[in-house]
Length: 436
Image 1 (tube, rainbow, N blue to C red):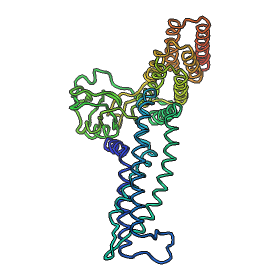
Image 2 (image 1 turned 60 degrees about the vertical axis):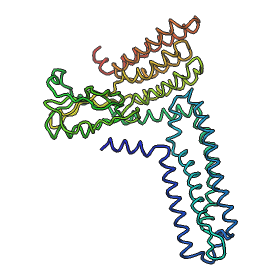
Image 3 (image 1 turned 90 degrees about the horizontal axis):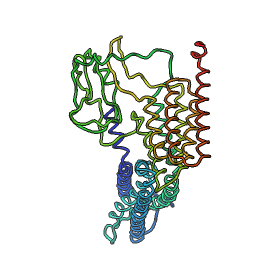
Image 4 (image 1 turned 90 degrees about the vertical axis):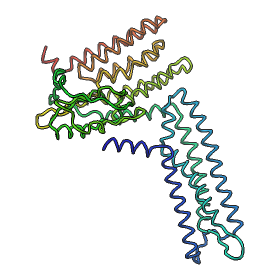
């Protein structure tokens, strides 16, 4: 069910969907206006309705139709060219965001709907003395749609200008990351997490191999637990959202057998999508930083902006944790599935930035500062160790690639400050005080 909803959401988010709906509504409105006028005419007193003749209606409808489709074609073709150039430094997310933005879709829909409405209305205009007909209602609406097109054009230019700003793209990805973290994590509780069985438990199980290939976009855990509970089996999923599933490779193991309808709960697709795939959202931000640090772009300020957003996300994770990936029902094991780990999240965030920014002291300094701030507020000792590990990797690269002695001394001082902060955070832990 969730897989069907995911595909429907992807389908309705396509660039053509909203313009197609608006065009269909415009054609329906044009047909309705013509039918009303043919049956009831124009009541007296409606002074705001177009009152011109057949030649004026033809000229006005023709002008609106040609202008709407001409402006739409010119503006959108120039915009796509500009976006393609900007995507070289911001990544393909910029183009994807443009096509999925409802504002851009509404602007295109306004132009195309206006063209379809006026063209449909134009075909009903008839001259001569026998059966003359002028769709006065539709000509009036066409004039209103022409004004709407002007307003949409002004909005579109301002909207696109903001959209190709680097800070706007980074903030957009930050918001995606926040939503993904909120969905993927929960408040940490004092209850002990359910334990998964050892590997030997699954040795005699029935293995399910994927008949198809693609990225795992969605894992419907509710459907899997229901299927396992219905047949009284234990089920293990060996792939997680974001993994590329190759054909004829294992995706699930069932003990003592596989329940029915496992494959429909694993939604495969041609590309990674946000949602359950937390690392995909992280990698999009990391890719922006990596492109900014490339020799052709050389924009460390953008990389520092990305590091700040990662620090924001890690601070929001304090006090939150991932589900254990183990589901029991009535004290019976029903489902085991892989989940994102804190270490894997840090690797996705900082490996690319550290590797591409190893020759930039400004980037390394900010990375150490952000790691220190996160360590200072983090009470989990295991997470502190992972943060110190990335700090150690950063200072190791800096020692190798930093030529200026002053810059290296600054980096060493920041690294020592991080280690001291980590030590003080350990001292503040209740279990540390009890052990002393």
